[in-house]
Amino acid sequence: MDNLKKQTWIKLIHTARRQLALDDEAYRTILGAAGIESSKELSSEKQFDEIMQAFKNLGFKYQKKKEIILPNRASKAQIAYIKRLWDLGSRSKTESGLRQFLRRIGHVDDVNFLTKQQASAVILALEDILKKASKEAE
Image (cartoon, rainbow, N blue to C red; front, side, top):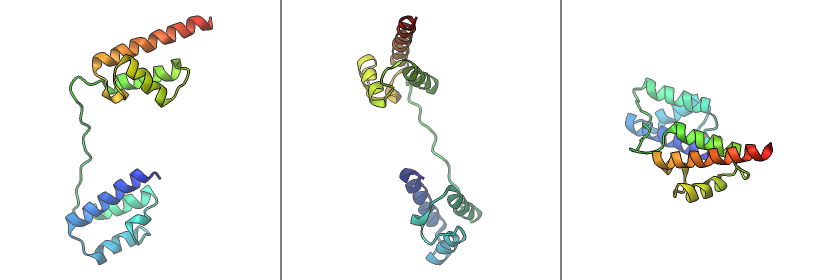
């Protein structure tokens, strides 16, 4: 389990505890039912789900944050297509190589910062690279 996911789960558990105004004994009982004594001992998604289900049964409600889509930003499909084209056509196939390419063609540091127009330019450039590579292979 990665550290960021665990930190997010721990924050959510503590948020639920505060919202439900649980005393230490009730909180420890819920954790004990999941087989741990402290939220820092959390080691699996199953344990997290058990704890969150207990909180939900007590009335805790939470919503996942909605993804914010900025106007004129490249779509998820464009971003995925750029990454696929990069994997197919580039020699380096590294994230840093893609970032250098994006700086040169799209004038941004990350694929998520591309506008629709910049994404189109990057896609056209990558398609040209693929065409040249296929001609060289023949």
